[in-house]
Length: 175
Image (cartoon, rainbow, N blue to C red; front, side, top):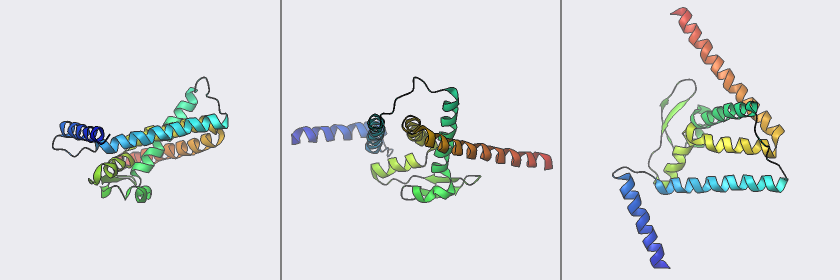
């Protein structure tokens, strides 16, 4: 059994070297993150089954827009907002401000798992699938509280857009 394990580890290291070349790409960390996501999605499915929740035949356009907008705002807030930087700090390094209360952060190489987590928590695109999955599952298992949370996130996102438009309008009017 040890020989099989050693061969598998050697093959995984060879794949890592062939894929990454000189770059430090945390394939093992990504694989771990995908595994955790699988457990997350599976747990949500079991929760739905245990609670007796039934999948709707389809989600309406309104729910899809609500979830999409809420997912956008939540992922942006978690990955970029200054106020949530303490959540990212163990895995990222502050670089500079990035505009309206957002930060640019880098992901120092801290081993495969730490690097993969750093990329996940500082990338709104990466967080989208996690947040969207959680919100969609919430609509099935606990629709009323999920709609409340999604509506608040959507309202905040719309308010942010209006603030940016207002500021842009002021600059155009004065310039």
